[in-house]
Length: 104
Image (tube, rainbow, N blue to C red; front, side, top):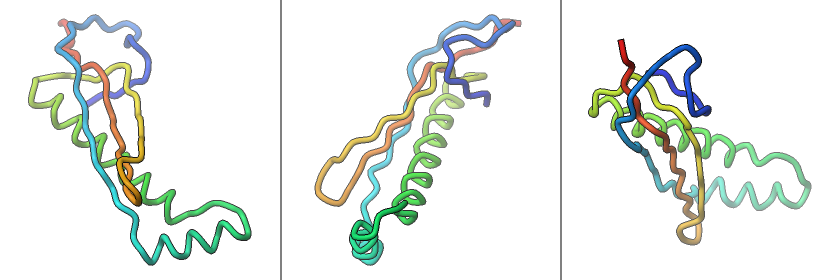
């Protein structure tokens, strides 16, 4: 499955199937949360949170791709990511784009 953030694929004609998305709500681990709080005292990257968000994006992307495959898509154009806090200690990561089918 080809994923692109642009709205077209150069040299490729396609028809739009529809919007596809994948989402996950990921909660923080208490132990990691405590260590992250300690890290804020000295500054720098909070690698445990970075890893958590990377994993969440991967899961959301896979869910988006799975939805596109069920629709018979060849690619997803206009891929975007969004995140938001849904409650104390939990964040939603959303991947979305437009599923397309290539014209032969």
